[in-house]
Length: 410
Image (cartoon, rainbow, N blue to C red):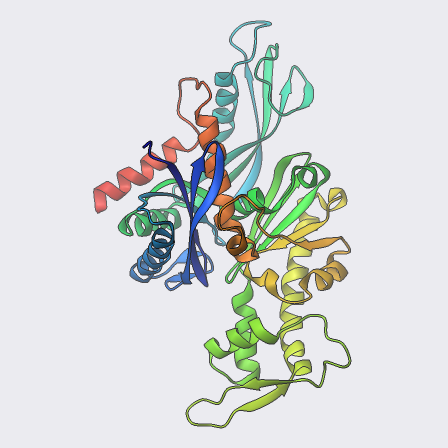
């Protein structure tokens, strides 16, 4: 029996590590394993304790592998954190033959030209994504291969990361028994699972609101245009609850998940929420209005910062499809309506698309990045089946640098 090809996505979050395993069967994806465990050792998307991070990764991957009944040794991994930076670059080349046909190698050359930007020694490019190509001054071309032209230009969205943060992710996954195929910016991965092509054409802002960060990605005319990572997320809401009602962090997280809401009716204001007693103390009760008054200012603060980033991007006037919010914080009741009032744009909660297999499990915003990593890997697999010109891909140099570094020190 032929061995089935598997794709594994590992979402390294501040509050959870999620691992998803998919099999490719007759050209279709099928989710066969899902594992999730509390994340220890990460803060705001960055590894701060390597051993704890390794243990969390192992638990999540082992859970998914047991569910699938398989062993895995490679993965696609997400990366986030306030160290992420992005810019849009422009590059221009002349084609090899006057009036000749543009080849795949020509598109690789123009991307390589865009990547030749001066970077500090502590930073590395993790993505160089074409926004549009320009052939002999004709703009708005998505794929110029096969067209005739003398001059090929490209606008490229370049995402960079702190080399040490990326190396720590590679190291943790390697020590957990996984070889990393690619590091993928988390909002980019999430876009694969929750956005539709017509939304990306019309203009949409994706917010991936996790525990430690809120990741923002803006798409327009079918291409990614702007990315930003804001170092605020659901953990700050939990901390506010813990301080505001004087309860341990674990209890505050439970109360947030069960009772926190951003759409409080007059009838609900007096409803009581039980706060379990600690250290032998009796249970206490607070009103839902008290909880609302703790949660809503922090959510408003985060969304106001996002609103400023959207305006700063220069694309606030072209978001015809509005805003899509995903990630663990998207579970907060009433967040979509609350956000609409701040953004003055239509807002919806994004859940991963149905792709077969364990659909009921993954239809949850917390799995948006994990499912997106699977879909990203599937797209790369299909692209690898196409004829490829000579020359390194945009990921190979980065991977080789990390692998050489890991081999040297470990």
